[in-house]
Length: 495
Image 1 (tube, rainbow, N blue to C red):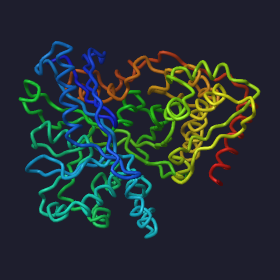
Image 2 (cartoon, one colour; image 1 turned 60 degrees about the vertical axis):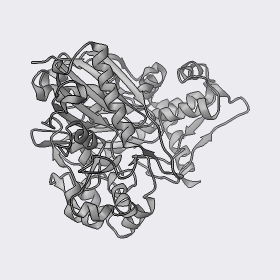
Image 3 (cartoon, helix red, strand yellow; image 1 turned 120 degrees about the vertical axis):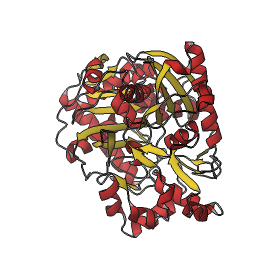
Image 4 (tube, rainbow, N blue to C red; image 1 turned 90 degrees about the horizontal axis):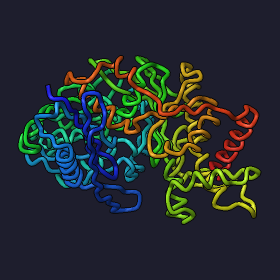
């Protein structure tokens, strides 16, 4: 059996390919950025051909770097930006409109109308989601309504819908496979995550012909073989998961009560709730963490819109720093007597507030406040927002206790930020040895399905922390700081 697994990590701003050996050690990687399109305020699109060409280029580049051929690769795993919506012709394989990206807000009026109809309780019960433009369903409805002839073609079965994983599977297999996995289906707002199937009533309300929907498979499954001409030989696609779910797998969060948080532009925290789908009373999302052997494992998910983006604001907006890495030294040098609080609601507040109208605010400024205090406030805001999520998760599901938080993403490189996170949470924070947990997770899914990687128990046992950050802040100080944050958020929402 060939000894390598190739992970395709198709993200919002770039595509990557990473090659792992059977022991899940990284052997080579390649990355390529692609253009973002903003045709109107609040609209975000990608050209699907850019996505496709960047993926193919990265796969070819990583094989060349490693000096390997297609025959050396046992399986491909695909992880992807979630919710982004593509509609394409089955005959041509070409999209009828640009991909509408998860960040796109054009369907806010439709979402408001659906809420006014009283549909949200049904959506929450079936899909675990809130009605929001974030998810795929209303994006798909927009394409069908606004692209001439699209609905008529869809009703005849001539069009296919998919999230990015489905589009890539279709293209990679030469149109032989139209499929997705349960984690991506769970983010469309059309999939009943209790019943495990597309929901006819939701599809009918949104005018979506069910003939255009992909088949839903396990996260580790047979998704077909790639066209031999693409990479010099056919390779089996054996694992698929949305990016945050793939990171959950990569962090080996397989037991109920285990937590992971990924810190990039925003932050996504997932709590494994096992076989139980928890209905959140605190505006968190219920979702599928992964699905193996036909059995879904559920999770509670909380989304923070601004994490690393707050540091980008310091760099690009205020011009206070030249590089993100400078924030740690500034935070360490900040005046401890000043307690500046930044509420980074630049694009609204995510969970558990879900206030798209909120905007950023800074509290506690004095004449002596400067770049150091703002840098510290930006880094601290990540910890405060994470505590908001974890408190909501504890309120919804009592099985967390003092769980360890496993972290990944670019911001975790900052020791200062991770120490503050542990301090304000009052819980240990583990940073793994391999930070590429999204690619690692889907590589394990594919490699395990192909029979060259260890099983779930052995994979979990192989996970190791590069460093554990233990909380050292006295409880009275932790309580006082968090209460100050809560007052700042309340003031921001009131404004």
